Image 1 (tube, one colour):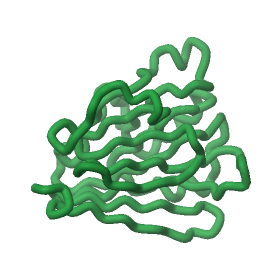
Image 2: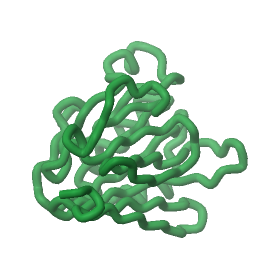
Image 3: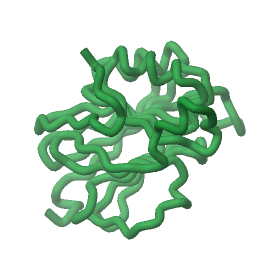
Length: 182
């Protein structure tokens, strides 16, 4: 049923719930699976670690994944380093390391940029584009919380939520059409 490949994943409904995960490094925590249930699309922003992580995520929803700097092997070579995906009719740009962004992005080219790598959860708006780093959902590193993110798309309104997996605490950051200059 969720047989779409990463490059084909596209959700056109005006209302869409996107689960965002990164830096699993081969560990897909049960709490992350629970947090991602109900997603219409799941984005994995790299450092997946094992192909089985993507297989499990595909049982929840279609998956769009990018390859991280620690993803190696035949399975990883099939995964793009970056790419655009449509969700809720909006264009999202996904890459692993934001420092490798090699093109100017603005509200005309995409609504959100999704990246991982730093293991630090972050939601920030810049020039009408929402930047989301879901943090790390894999092995704990650097004493940072273990997190995933959720992006709710309601027409042209974006609401990003960071979810701490151990506590269930959430932090919401809306980006409305007004702040996007639409």
